[in-house]
Every structure is written in structure tokens, then in C-alpha cells.
Length: 106
Image (cartoon, rainbow, N blue to C red; front, side, top):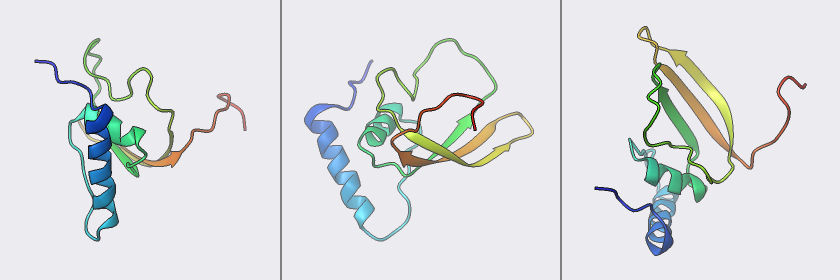
């Protein structure tokens, strides 16, 4: 069964609920394993930090978090470590609009 992407009024409603939660005191809000919800919240600029776990395998197919047509977003690496089994644990701060450049320059 294929679920619809979060779009239209439903996405707007979810974004409003998350924005309201972020205004309240308390702990962090986390999304685990939902690429559609995560991408919708990233598009709405409601994500402050990404914590990615990258496995050392190439599957060739599957659901992508950074899909074609995603809203361009700047990220800054704040933490990186590797587990003994080879998992890469990376934390990125969301910085807003990306800065474009050329690899190897300054």
C-alpha cells in the first residue's frame, strides 16, 4: 500500500501543529523513520537539526529522504562519528538557504 505524500491542507495542518508544539516549553520533537513527514517538516522550515545514521551498503532502490524537487536547504555538520560496524552517525544543523560554491575553493 502506498501512502500519499503530505501535501495540501493536511501538510499545512501538520506544519501548524508542529509549529505550535515548538513554541511550548519542553524537550525536543523527534521524527523516526518517516521520510515523508520529515521532508514535509524540512520544507516548512520546522527542523532545526538532522541526525542521520548512514549504513555502509548500496541498495540501488528505496525511499529517499532528499527527494527530487526538495526545497534547497543549507546544512552544517556539527558532529560525526563512526561505529565499529561502520555506521556513520552524523548531526547537521539546518542553516536555512544553502550557500553555493565550487568544491576545492577557499
